[in-house]
Every structure is written in C-alpha cells, then in structure tokens.
Amino acid sequence: MDRRDFLKLGLSSILFAGLPKIIFAQGPSTLSISEGKDYAAITRNAINALGGIQRFVKKGDVVVVKPNLGWDRKPEYAATTNPFVLKAIAEECIKAGAKKVKVFDNPCNDPRRCYENSGTNGALKGLKDVELKQMEDERYKNVRINGVALKEWELYDEVLSANVFINVPIAKHHSLTRLTLALKNMMGIMGGNRGYIHRNMEDSLSDINKVVKSHLVIIDATRILLNHGPQGGSLNDVKVVNKVIASTDIVAADAFATTLFGLNPQDIATTVTAYKRGLGEMNLSKIKVIKA
Image 1 (cartoon, rainbow, N blue to C red):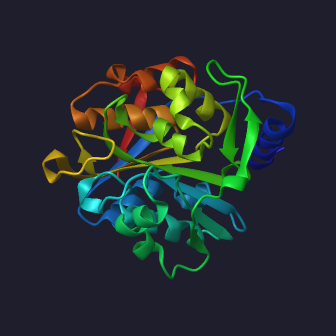
Image 2 (image 1 turned 30 degrees about the horizontal axis):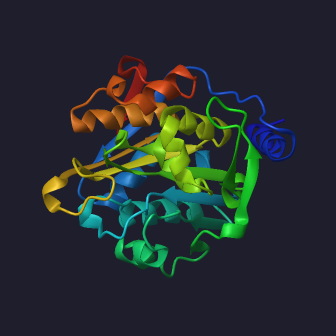
C-alpha cells in the first residue's frame, strides 16, 4: 500500500469507523524560505526547494488550497493570504496535472466581499480547473475525533475527500493566541459554533490537526500584521517582510514563522501543545532550513 492509498484508508476510517492511528514522518524536519518582491516567484522557489509541487500533486488529483480569507480587507493590510501567493500555488498544481484545484475559506465577514477585496477573485479568475468557491452549509460532515478537547466536530467534506490539502495562512498577530499561523488556519474547515473552541484553543486545534493532515504548508509572510489582529485595518500595523515559508511539518513552519515577530516558538501555546502532542518539530535547532 503506498502513502496515497494509506491516507485514503485513514480518511475512510475517520468518516465511518472513528479516529485512525495517525503516523507522522520520522527524521529531521525541513522547511524552505524564499525572499523577494516577486511574490509568485518566491512562492514557486519555496515549493521547488522542497522537491517541487509534483512531490505532492499527481495527475488527476483534486487539490484543496485553504488560505486565510476571513476578513474584508485589501492585501496591503496583511489580514488575508496574498493573492499572488495563491495564484502561484494554483498554477503549480494545475501544471503538475491536478484535475481540480478548489480554493475556499469560511470567513468571519461576508464571503463575497472577502474574496473580492482580498484580491483572490481577481487573481484566480480565468484559471482553468481552478475554482474559488464559497463553502456550503450542507457539506459539513460530523467526524468522530476522540481528541483531548473535541470528541466530534463538523468538518468540511471537500477537505476530507481531497487527494491533497495545502494549508496557506498569512502570518499575523492574533488577540487571543498571540499569532495565527498554519495550525490555527484549520479553524476555517470547521462548521458549527467555532467560538466554542476558545475554551481550550490549543488542544482543540491539535485535535483538528491530528485528524486532517496538511500535506504542504505554505506561510505567506510577504506582509505580516504585527498588532490588532486578526482583522487589522491600519497600515501602521503592517511590516513588509517579502518572505514565503514552506514545509511538510506544520509545527516547524509555525515555529519558524514566529521568529519573524521577534518571538520564540515557546511563546505560542498553540505551537507548544502541537509539538507536545507529536504533530511536528518546534525546536529550531532541529529544523533544517533551506534558503531558496
């Protein structure tokens, strides 16, 4: 049984027989970081440094790309994933032979306005086999999680059935968790009363990330929001960094991105909890960094 068949079998177990045993890759964690003002180019560079998109996407695959499009903000306010980053990812997936690339989020503001004003609609418009869609209430499926904080939850079925799931957050401040990165970006696949998990945010996010694995994490750090996140609204809170980070290790990606804010991974409870629960590596000394 190859890895792809194993993941499909694991998904079937989640949907129909409860939580399967999740096996995470062994060996040193690796991430790539690329810097420059051409955001599409540095996104491609970061992916290529990990072996290229063809390492993850095969001919005929359905790919879900999950950005952070939660707020009605223009790209310069660093509250939503940069549209040039998203366009480059979608184009790479199609080039690798993906049958369909689906891009969506569950925004806090009006989805139509979020998709339009973030620049995502314009960036993806006209791309063949790429669909920017609004999430539909009837497509959430109740999944048995049997986690530390969550025993079950409604998760979006197009994520669960995708061959490849690519997690593409923007790096920004968050008033509750200090930062919101890839681990927290997974809230966007959750239905129901998401506010409930604020009671035990760290374990709840680890529970979700245990069930739904991000095959590839690409963190948009082209502009980062330093204060008043997650919504922002003032350019005074934005720092231009011109970086993109990519990794198959979601904890390593979050840990490294934390340093862009002058913080340590140990400062972010979400990262610490995920590390303790075996979702990835947070010790920077144990993470191989490739400058692309």
